[in-house]
Image (cartoon, rainbow, N blue to C red):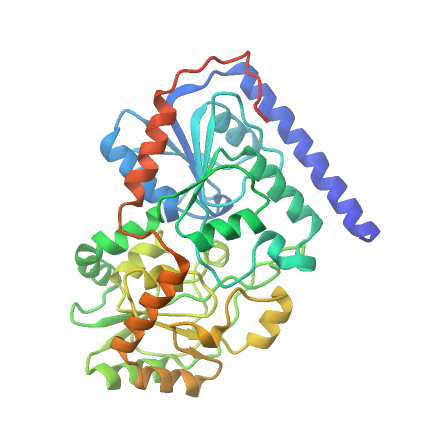
Length: 411
């Protein structure tokens, strides 16, 4: 580790220690509020979405007496009236966390977060089965500061929700976590089992897509700066001819198709609109739409590169096409991938022509059989009832009896 890395780590540790002081102050000044749950998504950059959204909706439906708070970077983001938005700034965050009975998140907490006795932290993580290696599985590609942040967050977690045996093994091996896990499924995926009939017409109306048109959701993953300690956010033009893809789908199915673009939240949060240079008909930008899973529930097929949305879509047998023209470089940057891209149920292409051929030759029956075999090897538990299981865990935490010890911290 060079002197720059050493200096950067010292700087981050100093900030973390100051954060802990702020958390201590808030814990001394305020008591834990019964029935209060604080949510966060994508380190505050996300809106009302992912697993926390699904859990919040279930809690509100069954327990309207609960106080639900969401930490968010951009206070302009829209939330339902039963959610109280709070700015994801240090003093605000410290107050909300210090006074909540339960925390629900799908990403890591900021370095320096401190938890009190009598509080519970439910980690729902934002991917279950995935392509990209995480945590310790990144080997030498994992910066020391990232390890420190992950270790500190994992030490706070009371329970990590998982969806499969593969997911549990990965969490134990890669995520610096040694606490209990519970295989409940993915709360965000429940909507794929129960919400497609209602969301399909609503999403089409929202984006001005004809009700008889098919939708290809295109969701490229986050790229820039992910393997360095200085993370940057960039938007690059996709090297893909959207019109040819839509034409191939229409020729294959005999139906009109629309392409719905959904950027990763870490990119979308820095952009008002994706720079679509191509003048292509039937392309809509859905990057600023709050919930990717509502879009996925309305879609008829998914196109992505390395996004874990591919595996989520597979739980309801949605056709998935993979396209990545940078496979060799991406694997080198990531050290490895969890799966051989050519030996998955999803048709994979590194060129535009190969993608078009995969669309033209797509065999749904063969695809479904391959998916069933793959999901059996993963030992998944996805049946549309994950929210119910997560809710029971939170209910148990809410009703337990405990004694606060002068604002003492458990970690």
